[in-house]
Amino acid sequence: MLDDFLHYINANRLVRKNQRILLAVSGGIDSMVMAHLFIRAGFNTGIAHCNFSLRGKESDMDEALVKRFAARHKLPFFSARFDTLSYSQKNGLSVQVAARELRYGWFEEIRRKSGFDLVAVAHNLNDNIETMLINLTRGTGIAGLTGIKNSTDHIIRPLLFATRDSIEKYCRKNRISYREDRSNAETKYTRNKIRHLVIPVLKEINPSVEKTLTETAGRMHEVNEVIDLFIKELTGKSIIRGDGMVKVRLEALEPFAGNDTVLYELFKNYGVSGNNLGDLKSIMKGSTGLRIFTGSHRIIKNRNELLITEPFTSDFMDISAGNPEELRRVPVIKSVRLVKVTPETAIPADPATAFLDFEKVRFPVTIRRWRPGDFFFPLGMKKRKKLSDYLTDRKFSIPDKEKLLILESAGKIVWLIGEKIDNRFRITNKTTKALVIKAQKL
Image 1 (cartoon, rainbow, N blue to C red):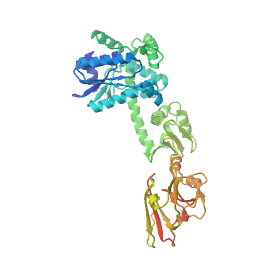
Image 2 (cartoon, rainbow, N blue to C red; image 1 turned 90 degrees about the vertical axis):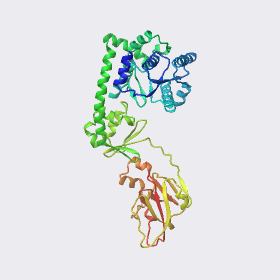
Image 3 (cartoon, rainbow, N blue to C red; image 1 turned 90 degrees about the horizontal axis):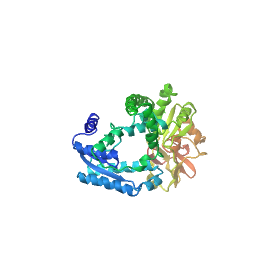
């Protein structure tokens, strides 16, 4: 098995020469065998153990075993004790997910602080197959059928080639001490149901099911590479990022509007799953203003495109400024100055700059969100216009409407910030002093 171990590491380029490897060792058979193989192979290693405080004295005995193993082999030993139940309850996570977050976060902390290059974890071939079947049962894209990756960032999984049977044989042959987590035999967890109830039935149908599913995972990985390339090209043609949102050109997606796989792969990073894929297709065919919330993002139909943003929260509080100096300190304002107006004074056309008749602006002024019922007199017009109608005529998207702020003086709108001033506050031939305000980009 040592030869297979080294071949797998070298063939997949998991470890480079002289790299230091932190071994994640729980005390179970897989991680103890992995540690034994690394030591026999002569790698520069240290051992890290997490005590999740879930099994009382048994958890402490696991830690003691690993600590003795590290001492016997004169390896650096790191341990941490976590209150996993409290963490899971506080963060609304399952115990398994909480333990995963805690251990990987701590592994990375130790890796960086103690100068290790990689963290090795002991997932084996059977874990890989179980993950595939869990994903298949719950519903997944192609990526979910590729199994566990043998390396991600600084994490390596050098036992993915080994079956559980081969690990047990190596353990017996080399008389490696380990501890068995009794919960591994219980079938209340999904993975254990797959392990103890499903895979034995599959092996009755196909005794080589482990090999078969591993080969299938390899083919799915190759298929996924092709799909990733296609999705990358389609993303370049259809998606534009900027101004705090993602815009999706529906024209580019028209040939694939009914293809669930393409749409899932394109939108999965925005929270789209099999549960809301139908809703996504509905708004793609629907009218402007239709939207869905995926949990992580909001997707809005806007004419011939989709706009993807994070869920909107109206957290902007009204800000009052008693004079130009106070206005200058408002976060959304870049600069404020007073300018003497002469016949030669040039008024900038930049919508981010308001050139106002200072005598007509009454302080204090307020910066606030616009509200339904607001109206103003757009520059150059003598009739008032509802702000909602103006924004519709200007084809403002819903996210742009939500971001819009106004400057108000004595109950009158002075400026749609970054857009247009009110005609009542324009510079005239009677103006002697101008209030010039430049806005930050919103």
